[in-house]
Image (spheres, helix red, strand yellow):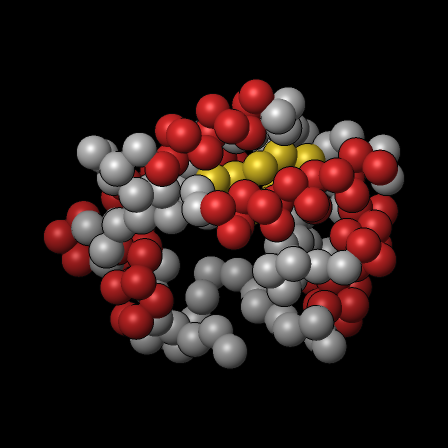
Amino acid sequence: MVWARNGKLPFRVADERQAARAARDLQPEHTIIDTAARPEREVIQTLAEGCDFLVVPATPDALSIAALLSIADTLQELGVGRWRVLLTMVPPSPNSDGPTARAQLVEAGLPLFTTGIRRTVALPRAALAGVLVHELPRRQGVAPAEEYKAIAQEIPR
């Protein structure tokens, strides 16, 4: 369930049971589908066939990277070319998990977004308040909002 403090988000949110109707009725420019953490091959194939570009998020920890490598293998076996990995919840310095994971993924030849999403207190605070990160008071959400904007600019048109 998605909610906002003001009762209205600036975009439509639908669960998987409502997605087909929402896509037909609204004809959105962009559709974002949030899947289970480790989707099965059939789900990956269906998503890849039904989208113009696939964003595969991963956190920079061993379990997430292992799952990501499995998904990447499936995408490569299926011949999917329009996808990239988005590193999320990247811990701040001096923790080196983010740069280490990025280096491993580059070495593995996976397509990566240049920008990652850092772990900040702004994201859980925004979720708790039911607002988008840029709507937080005292400019708390500026950095995450800018990171997401940078990611959007990297998505091929």
